[in-house]
Length: 311
Ligand code: NAP
Image (cartoon, rainbow, N blue to C red; front, side, top):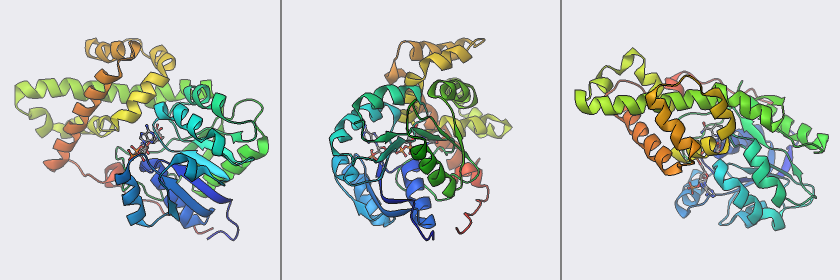
């Protein structure tokens, strides 16, 4: 445990893969005097209480941020604007407000106008994850040797950025600072486009599978199953990523085939329902492969996990 916590009170809004991993790592490393959390549903809040990782589980976002020195929104990108508006009046002056969203331009656009001048807004994106979601999916080692990108808007207090950098570094992350637009361009090619390709291939194969009686699933070890891991990622999260980073993703698209054009059209039209349905369908394929023993359900293909060093 650290001798000195980095923050007296840390509020995590949302307790899924990322929020749950931050809670576990921060607890293990002694980074917070107290961690208070909330989630949208009573079901998740009850489960977080059962897990016993955090100090307090509260029912509302406003209650969670009260007196917090660090507030991190660990929720889908599309939900960040409305939640920023909801918590604005309850934030402690001097607090650092951050997030973990996979798109940064839209986060700055949607959150910044709501936040009072008395807080420091330092958006963040830990480039680490698995295809699992929900309160049980997080683990303390998720961020070890993974990059966390900070995108402070112009004029943000450098000391606040440094404090957040130190917090992420203490959870094992390597930290880099860049502009929100540059982040979105880089991630469009390194993360968003690969996900789009995986979602396309798995969806196309699903249609073939209906004709070939599940041969695609049966013989998936030829490479297809690795795409299915990515294509099983959370539909809400990825719907929001593509809607929020539309420009950069479209710029990276160029020579796509007919099946990919279907998804491209859905993104261009902002048809979240079509994307969500598609992603939900592909997620089920992944489950089918795990069920017939063609792959492990463990995160990161069950590769051994590194351990955090004691501070
Ligand atoms: P998750 O496991 O699905 O958890 C999402 C959490 O957000 C849940 O606690 C959920 O509450 C809450 N939530 C959902 N919709 C909400 C809304 N409209 N208002 C308030 N709370 C809401 O998701 P995650 O994977 O941790 O992702 C969270 C964020 O991290 C996303 O912005 C994503 O872009 C980013 N991120 C994800 C990964 C990854 O690999 N998964 C990697 C890096 C960054 P309930 O459970 O009560 O519904």
